[in-house]
Image (tube, rainbow, N blue to C red; front, side, top):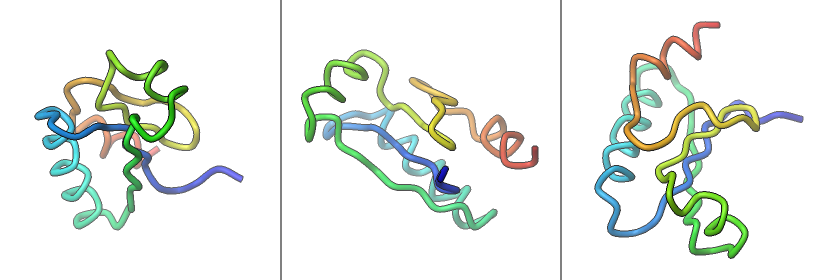
Length: 80
């Protein structure tokens, strides 16, 4: 079953990750869509997969954004 929450792959001391969290909090507040944060340093496979891409946002088990997060694109995704 696919989740109806965003997954944010991030790490500590990552300014883009901090920006992504602010954006996802705004989406949560405005549209009620939750998110779960996973530190890529918690799993070697995640670290290897996402080290150069973070922050990475996943929606329904699909990567929808990475790097600089665009709030309007996230909101448009949710309107589909």
